[in-house]
Length: 207
Ligand code: 5GP
Image 1 (cartoon, rainbow, N blue to C red):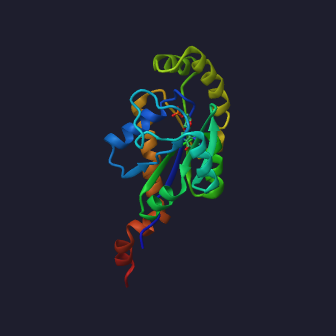
Image 2: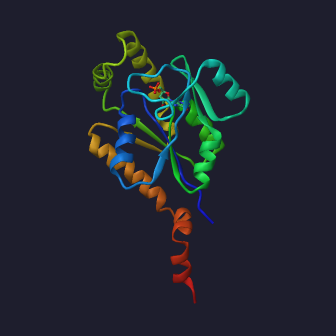
Image 3: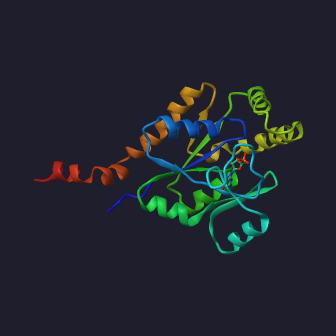
């Protein structure tokens, strides 16, 4: 029997470095996992590809997906809709592959309710000043959008204690190592090892 994959939820305020951490993790680290590609009604940013960063849909398409119960969770964030496909998550986990959900606190609350064994990780910036610097430095959004996101960041961060783990992204490499440690420890729980080391454990315990 294949063990189900682990479901990791990663949330952070915009500018905490969540996307860079997840990309670096998948690119450089020996972890076998997939990041779920969400549906969204927001416009693509420069460089974003449909189907790779998001499935970009219009409001009507999103609403019909809600009506079809196609979403595992969905939420309105910054005036746009975002949702995680139910079928994709279920199929990937059933294959024994770990899945990362890069979603906000509203989605995280829904996922925790539906799947209490999921592992929540919240990423905090080291300070408000640094967060503001990072949001400005990104250069993709207007001053108005940045000001709005700073206000949203405070509200997003107030949910940090609803997560199992908190990483402070001050030093990028350390934050990446912290994230990897969380994933590794999850794979070393006895519940996981019973599946992954099944043959070996049976052999060890054979009389
Ligand atoms: P952005 O527009 O900057 O890519 O994402 C804005 C926020 O929406 C981020 O906090 C991101 O984690 C969140 N988000 C992205 N996809 C989903 C999703 O499928 N569900 C929920 N609830 N939030 C999402």
